[in-house]
Amino acid sequence: MKRVAILGPSTFSEEATRHFFGGNFEYVSYKLISDVFTATASGETDLGVIPIENTLEGSVHLHVDWLVHEVNLPIRAEWVFPIDMNLIGYPNPKGTSEGTNPYGHIRKVLSHHVVPAQCSKFMKRYLSDAEFEQVSSTAEGVRIVSTLEDPSVAAIGTAIASINYEVPMLQKEIQDHKDNMTRFLLVGVEASELKPSNDVKTTILVTLPEDYPGALHQVLSAFAWRRINMSKIESKPTKKKLGTYYFYIDIAGSMDSVLLPAAIQEIEAIGCQVRILGCYPSYSYPANISEV
Image (cartoon, rainbow, N blue to C red):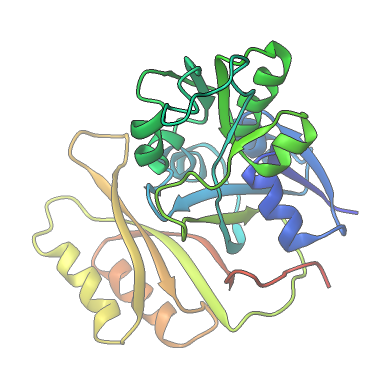
């Protein structure tokens, strides 16, 4: 049975991974995303699950940096999963009068650093006087709340964390947008046999040659005239020299096609460096991608 590293336990990563992979894997929880990467890169686990992009926040840049600069782990699959944020804590022991803020007794909120941006409306309305404290994951916030048993300290996290740590859920689905989704990547040295998908993606890094006018235009043109869809393109610093950048590009297409390898050869011919991070199946919610 293959071992899969996840950020956890009781996190959105665990919820998403268990939904898509079911019981065919052994899940190993780590408190830090860096530990998920290093455990998979070292062979301690066979695969790792990385949240890489959110509907509201866009790319998780720290995780992209790990994927690009710190490890050499090919992308093996991607899928999306709905993210429901919940206020988890203990009710006001004095009760709440009608018309007053039912969460006015909360003075500190614990959660992952991406949470305030995703729950800004609720927090502004009900938790504006509360201090926000960043912790390593949404589940870790709930765990801390369970140990404190202090009504003035609450967390924002998953429904599974509320159940596992036996802390009441004060309010369900407090995120600003109900269609909040997160995209997860499966990474690993060795491929895992998955159910087929109609959608295949390829992710590449392109570093432009120095002092080459129009290089980016030529890169884009190589894909455009072949009608290859670049579903995402981001520029990020190479961290080698000030003012030098690479482009992180998601492409709707497979390296098994004729057109995509030809496009890559064309941009390499003008001096671009190309690194392929993975060619992999892409799954939409609520698809299940359990191992065959």
